[in-house]
Image (cartoon, rainbow, N blue to C red; front, side, top):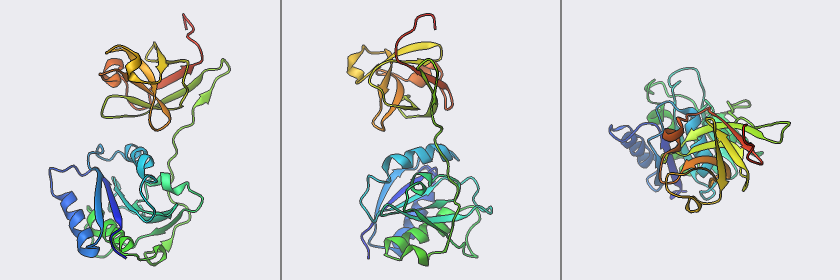
Length: 255
């Protein structure tokens, strides 16, 4: 079978020819596949950033899609190379947690991909993952690609902490390109967010506040985000991954 979608998520950038090599191998081995660039601008070696990005989209694509995610600081080491079948989709990438969103599905199955003797130890994206993805795109069953892996690496998003005073404490998971700080706090359409010593109202849309106002908003992923209308919350509040954010049901003056 050809014509399957193959998505690409990497930290390769586009200034060099790495993405081109990846695509060349895919199209040589599965000439009927359709390539979809998700992003090649993941921060270098940012496994968690890529994991969170993958979580947003892998189920949005139709069944049969092959997702390739190569953020691989351990390339050439003893870390396993994985192919996964989960919820009707396929995923290929290193066994470092980047593929975790698919591994938590009840029907997830993973196999370890063999590394060819001539594979470059610094470029498994081209020499291991792309050929495996091409075989899946061409209809090769998962079990023919390698031996089962029973305990692949799974990374979890930290759970927020419920406090005795009714507040919920969480943290910033990632900063998006708009400077919004995405937290691990589940969406609430009321209350206040405490971040960097400031209390921010939770609103439904940016249009509810004036330009430059700092707020909490419900993001499209269903999580609360710290934002500035037409600005960058990360810059305005000096936020980074791991920063503490607390949701309060009411604005308690003086803390």
